[in-house]
Image (tube, rainbow, N blue to C red; front, side, top):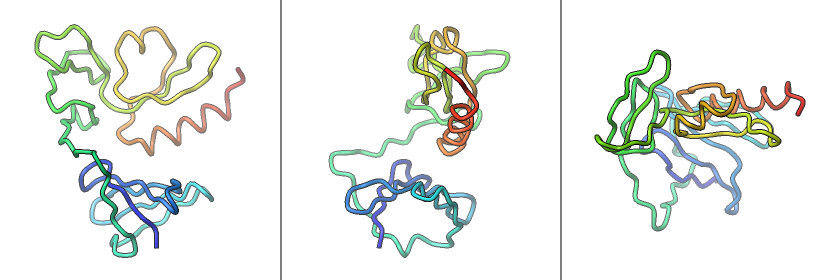
Length: 151
């Protein structure tokens, strides 16, 4: 039996064996999608009854807001108008503007890396792809970008 730890309430879990991450589960409508990173396979599940739910000690699950369907890392979101990107601030008078969702960024000398709700200054400075609605989608694109890219 595998252990699962909830990361996003009723939407996303980490799957572990002996405290080592082996995959993820995400809710897809009425089904659950299990991605096994050991062999890069995906399986659809009707229930999570085959998994043991383990509480994450010291972690309080916060209900984060979304913006146009893209997840954010904030419980309060103030939308910022932009022609193509879902942008937001965490406070009404805040100066930092973030992009909602998951991205991949091509850092100089480091190649493609993942990013969650990066600042707009970072998106302006580096080549990026995204936003993606899920970490899953972002990871798939990150693998493709790394495979096709020569640093």
